[in-house]
Amino acid sequence: MHELDDITGLIVDSAVRIHRELGPGLLESVYELVMERELVVRGLPVERQKPICFSYDGLVFENAFRVDLLVDERVVVEIKSVERLAPVHGKQLLTYLRLMNVPVGLLINFGGITLKEGLRRIANGLSPSASPRLRVNQPGR
Image (cartoon, rainbow, N blue to C red; front, side, top):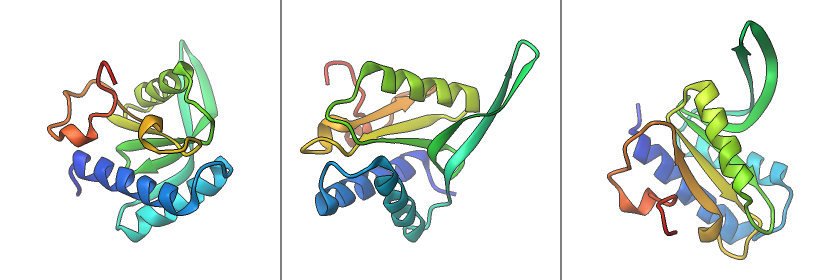
């Protein structure tokens, strides 16, 4: 089993490589498929378009939403291909993490000129990562 920081590091490294090679502006579905393949090649178990079910106040929501990628059953990866991330994107990912009881998620926007401004790590009740290079959602950034 991989350490959580190792998994997120591999995901970020894969995203940077893909963005460098393919560039910005392709459809999200293309980046999603390429990311899945890249992560599988790197030895990580990946579920693509994973349906999520949850219940609230006696109501059951079957296949209420789908996450783009679920890596090692512990990291949700949401892929965007937009000019700029909106605050709602991060909130949506945090809600997914809470409903699924998953510790961490990565929001990756392939739509920008560089990947740096389009990368957010969102934690669900975790202490900050020991690795400063992975702490992309720090205040002030």
